[in-house]
Structure formats: structure tokens, C-alpha cells
Length: 290
Ligand SMILES: [Zn+2]
Image (tube, helix red, strand yellow):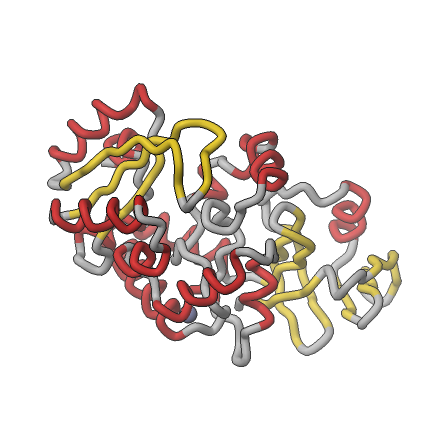
């Protein structure tokens, strides 16, 4: 089945939510050469699909023609999703994809500002950040500008690798890391994954339930450890690559403790101080998803 989903370009999480009736529609991009294969396989998987080619979307001309596929158990819903997207109605489209209304509203509100959505989610978090809402490894909804798309494309071998792109429990941008509706979706996803593929479920939780040092979409360090107040104790860096500089990575790798202060992070090995990482404009942030 994994191969079939690959042909349709559907991730396993979205497929399980679709089949379980939690998610009404899944929308993905498809290369032209994959359209016929995807239609055939969708039928085999018991899914309805509508494929549509776009030259314009959301009021703008696209740099190149885009082919979208809308999968659902119900062909009417495929049609509704296509109409919503074709009409540029982001709210309606988000709702048909099964995203929480609070998150759609927050996404739309911040869209024109060119902001870092990860930082917005963090800023809006009032309780403990939940790993169910950790969307560090999901890029498609967050990145919008040409510059960000270029960085992503250039480093697709890292960010589009299976290890990274399969590691999520929600696919949308949450309004906050403690958004209740998003946590509910994340819990349902995990429940379905555990039933279907317990090994993968375990690996995904392992990747998400961690403290993160965060600079931007492409520069972060995920640590194996735990944070308490302003001290983060760790034993290793999780094996997910990002574009963070080697000097910083090396410094963090040779330590086992971060002391978080307002203007810098101090790295220690035991009681010996190894070095400082300057904090500029509040970054890097330490977000503990444990
Ligand atoms: Zn929300």
C-alpha cells in the first residue's frame, strides 16, 4: 500500500484520516507524468479523485502550470474542494481539508505579512507546547515566498527526504502549539497510525516529542534531552539535518547542557563552558515539545 500511496503522492497520515472519515479531502500536487497512474491507483484504494490543471491560483499567475489532485471518499467533496480552491476561497478550502477554523483564520490573517508561521504558533501558545502540534518538519503550507521555495528546492535532498517529511501528526499550520482542535486531530492521527503501522508511529513520536532550538524554517537543532525552565540537558542531537551552520552544530554536539539567557545561549559540558550562541531578535528560541 505504501507504494500505491507514493504513486498518488498521499502521505500515510492523510490517507488514514481520509479512510476513517476524519478528513473529507486530501489535496496534493502531481507531476504530469503521474496523473494517469494516480487515477488508476486511487480507484484501487477506494478513493474518488478529480485532477485539475491551474495556471492561476489565489488571484495570481503561477510561475508554472500546477496540477492538483483532490482525493476523497465522495466525489462531490472533491468537486467542492476544487471549486473552493479555484475560487480562491481559502477559508472554505481549509474547512474541506478538515483543518480547524481557528487555525485557518490565523493562517489567513498572517498570510500577507510574510511572517514565520512557526514563530506565530509559538507566540500564540499559552499552555505547554504539545508535540501533536509540532509541525517543524512540514514545509508545504508554511513556505510561500519565492525565496523560501528556492531554499527548499535547493535542499530538497534534506527537507524532502522521507525521514523528515513523514514526521508529523498534523499537516496544517496550527494557530498555536496548544490548539485543542489541532491536538485532537494529532491524537486521531496517532491512534490510526499505531493501529496501522506501530513502528512508524513510534518513530514519529520520537521525532516530535523533543526540545528544539529554532532559528527559522530551515535552521534548527532537535535535541535528545529535556528542558526545565532555562536549562536544557541533552545527550545528543537528533539525526535530522537542517541548514544550521557547522560551527554552531559542532559546539552543541560537544556539550550536554544549554543555559538559556535573554541575549545568548551558553553551551556547557558538565560544569565547563564550551561557548555562547548569540540570541538575535529572540532567536534561537527553545521550544520544548515533550
Ligand atoms: Zn487552532
